[in-house]
Length: 303
Length: 143
Image (cartoon, chains in turn brown, blue):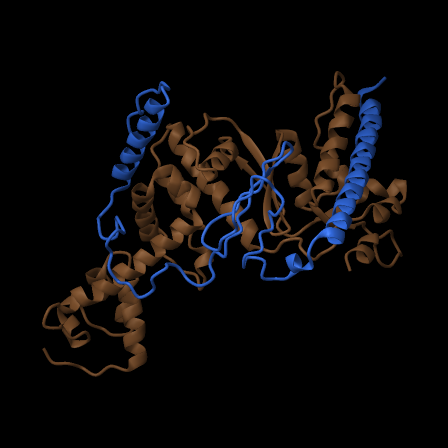
């Protein structure tokens, strides 16, 4: 077959498109992404990749294609070590291969490789089987922990201080908005997978938990991801605060009826805010400036 | 007493409780930070904490903080402190770059159907449950 000279850049881009194609080398050669660079089909592959005495052109390319996916599998295992432990490496790899076919790596950084993995598991799981949903939640938790670990944290930055809070006039306090510390987020799951995750992390052989709603808050302090379990009401309030609602707007979410025990509710609310604040969830505050005023209290605090 | 009056008063009480909690918690966080910065080795604040500097130091259940694995801090009653102190994403994936064999990389070229994988997962689930002496029901038919 006649060998055609191609520009080096074209060969690089073509080869990348071929070896990263989730369908394999043959499909990769025929794919639009590779034909954009070198317009050949699989029958003409020897015009670009010379066969050796021992291997054909396709086989030679497949070495790179397999290595590429092997590396991605390694990455996914590194990102989801606990899920890998729960499933076993072989099963995990099977899911991972299916995932990479449906959600091929498309980012410049491998840090995002697993961002759709829990979604993929959810999309492909058998319906109405709780044990399968547990794996989805476990993947979701593990991914979120990784995101919080890799993302910005509160290390080196100031958190809100008691002095600043004390200086806010009592009548303005309900308007206060709390700016979250970097990395703080809430997570709602359909299974309480945190104890399951921790047990697997410790290397224990444990059963997956039965179905029950689970609400978590995650943050990173001193480069360690910390996870707090929340009640449903706590989750609702904290999520509202993280979304930028004021203290009053968040508190308004607490359902109050004629028969409510306000004293007990107030104790709960106080404890929740205390725990969040003590855990370093908030970095600074903002108060809407009164008409005609200049800067807000938050401007002074969040320098 | 009318319901809306009760709600307004109660709402105010809850808002005050929230702010009180916020204030007290901020004091706790500040005290903890002061204590920490006064006692800890400043090396812990350098950017490259992953290189052998275990931020879970002092936690009895903490594990080593190797760049290849995960460190685990102690689990305390109020929250679970889960350490992920890995240098993940740095230095590339895989201990043997350049190795191009798929040996041991199961599934690399196998055409996997999702159903087959989930069936195997169900089998594994049943094995774990059986090993623990737990009962489980039949898998629902695929809809």
